Amino acid sequence: MNVIELDRATLQIGGRAVLKDVSFAIEPGEFIGVLGPNGAGKTTLMRAILGLLPPSAGRLTVFGHAPRCGDASIGYLPQLRTVLPDLRVRGLDYIASSMHGERWGLPSLSAANRAKIEATLDAVGARDLANRALSDMSGGERQRLLLAQALIGEPKLLLLDEPLISLDARHQEVVIDVIRQVCRERRITVLFSAHELNQLLGAIDRVLYLGNGQAVLGRVDDVVTAPVLSRLYGTEIEVLRAGGHIFVLSRGRDVERADHMHDHGHDHGHAH
Amino acid sequence: MFQYEFMTNAFAAAGIVAVVSGVSGYFLVMRGQTFAGHALSHIGFAGATGAGLIGLAPLWGLVGFTLAAGIAMGLLSERISNRDVAIGVVLALSLGFGLLFLHYYTSFATQATALLFGNVLAVDHATIATLAALGAVTLVALAAIMRPLIFASLQPELAEAKGVSLRFISTAFLGIVALAVSACAQIVGVLMVFTLMVGPAAAAQRVTCGLWAGLMLSAALALAEAWLGIVIAYHTDWPVSFCIAALSALCYFAALAMPHARPAHSH
Image (cartoon, rainbow over all chains, first blue to last red; front, side):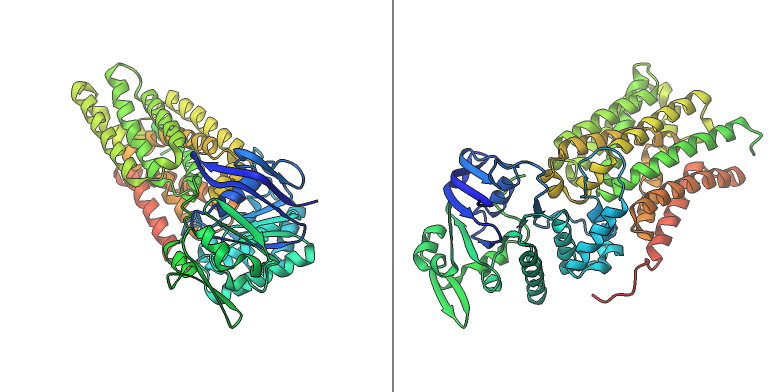
């Protein structure tokens, strides 16, 4: 059974079709890199999979059924937007807030849940973050904390929305390695959205490229080509391969890097 | 000093208000909505003077206006409750209306100072009973939504994905804050609700990053500042609100200056 399946699905935000008539299927255990220009629908797709945005046409199934809000088998790492700069809450309480955080009443943390949190923090090598305030953590440490949180509850599917944003190259590599290792061990299917393809090349099984309302899923060599990307970007695109790297150029400019310069935390196609 | 009834009344009223302010203020600081809390108290000033104008008790005008404003802000949620400019404009407008109402109801003017800066030494038994009821409602409501409130405050995107209604939480919370602000304004006045609602909570969050520890410390600091403020005022004859404000500021800056506790670690 496919983990995620879209069958001629259309996803709309405010009357605009972000993805139109899109079909693809993702198999269990796959590590999928989700790429595409700003506003191409990376966040929107994840929100649809989470059950926050039903398709306006076509069919979207997750684990064989329509997406359900609050599905425990999906781990989600939202794009970092709202961490207040001086949030003086320690890592343990931050993660604990997400465990049955939808229930009413006073917060409580059972010994079993505490052990679960500590175990996942260990799994991503971040045990020491439990007792440190979020405001004292670096960007890389916060991402690790969020990753640990997404792994709690043994999810079968991880949706990681731009986990590399605002990280330097070294931290990016560490985060990718940790995710790949943990997900291989636990056979977790991963959707990993990013601005740049190159860091992901060694980790991903297939790439899901979004753009122009369309989506193309396939092996990197089949998808990241001039004809396919020209169609998705709606402009003439050149693809150069050199030294194990892939450069996607539009009129001589590297589109991924140009995108990254403009985008610090906002996805234009995403509406709250 | 406890032989005077007005003193025991002051301690009782300040005690109730301090705990309520410390606890609800903790979440106000966590959510980064302190300015919204400040604005609510100013809106309350217009409500209180307006109530005086039509012959109602100022407290009910205060409660009514802040509650309505808090719920409205919550419903408009992301569009307004975190926007400094919109809040600032509404805040100034509210003070303006308060002034207008005072202008037309001049005999009320003696009470204006009490409303603006508080008058805890004039609290009677009926007011204490009202404050206790307001405080109880505030704490019970806060306890009921605390879990999703923390989740939604720390991780809104994830909370939404798990089925928490951000708008409901935001609205309920600002409604609760409105009640706390109304109670707090009775003690330190609408202009100085920060002293009990924000000062202790912010100081507590500097000192500890544990959730329950922070919450307890925030309430304890507010209580200590309120009671100690009354004691100092009794012995010096300075205004109580000044003493509380001074203690609140002192605690906050002391907490800022303190090297905060964290295990030795290199980034």
